[in-house]
Image 1: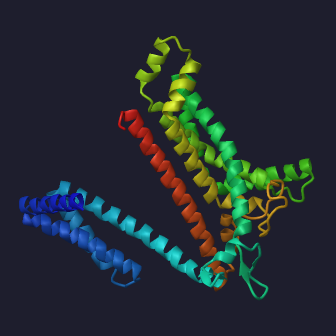
Image 2 (image 1 turned 45 degrees about the horizontal axis):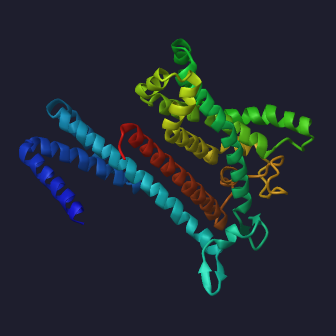
Image 3 (image 1 turned 60 degrees about the vertical axis):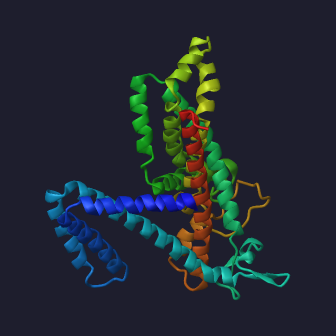
Length: 369
């Protein structure tokens, strides 16, 4: 508590010094810019007809401030835009959770006299938006998402780490300068392209080769999603491997270790946290992938039998949202928001985990405890 009070006191003192040392004209200009941006943002949220007025005032004040108080203006604009971005993302999150509440209430189950919201979504397997009474279980889609994610991780993890190790430690400089930008360009290919390739090439081949009806399987959907996540894993893992200090590698070589021994004993262990973060980011993309799964799967809410059977492909959390949102209404629409909440929470924890691992790596390489 004392530390928090001291921090607040320092910030208040800093703000007081800022207003005392800054010209009154600059304070007025910055106030106009920030106030107009805030009013414009609120007007946009309320769909007010006067939204353009404060935005025009912000533009005029920014134009004037650019010539008279450029440094302060840049700080104010970056602060204002950052605030608007954070508030917008926060409102989106709140909207998703609020819209999912009716679905969780509808699927409530009473256990020992206690009502547990949404419990039936995770204890039943029926998703039916037509037959009365309707029921919306997320278990089939969670099962499909888990299978696709595991397969995608098995594809993107080893291949991505191996490619990152080649680019950072083995490839000549000329090859590295060509391969690294090429890998980063692959990350920009739209997911629908991968899905279309999977639907027109992979699915027919799988149907003929394995005698599958239509060829839609979690195995090949996971493989395609793993290929999509591969550039992300390679890029982040390569940065982690490159960040290992040269002194550690040179010391290993000076003691008589071979290049391979240095990579396996020094480089990879030192960058393990960053490499793990890269894989987690790739897994996050695999979980949130929509179009490839929607195009290649059957979009039928069922659980394959046995549970580990990857030669069938029904539906994932993302594919059910993409395929049903156009015709959903009422409690059905709220159930799709509930699926979005599950996705959001899962990816959020993966992102937090990757950030935590990345911080640990930075502390480790920086010599901090």
